[in-house]
Length: 117
Image (tube, rainbow, N blue to C red; front, side, top):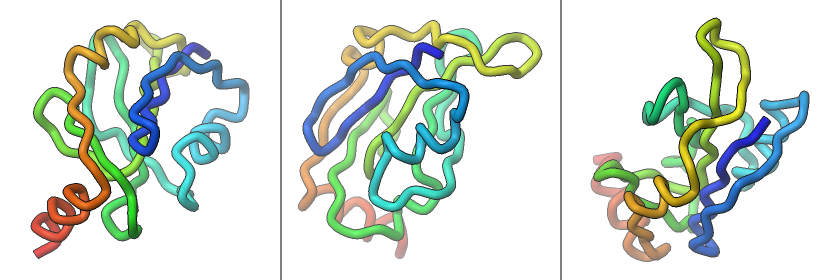
């Protein structure tokens, strides 16, 4: 399944292939002990950005704004078909790059702390 990986630590956005074990491969990509993901933003077609559901409770991560919304840690864009099954994402790396703003670890921690108050 064609997906997009957003790496906040290295400030890279790249296309990745996710195999049949979608959840585990997504946990591995997001890293930082991720064991739960949530759909955080709906994109083109049936695509969605998934992030670590517990990301705000983790320490020392960078973050990013995507189309004006803040996310702490890394993210993955998944695609799905009309029936809700996994499918290649329609969103392109260029689409993501046009709407992303990277946030340093220090600034991401400040934003995270203001959200958790």
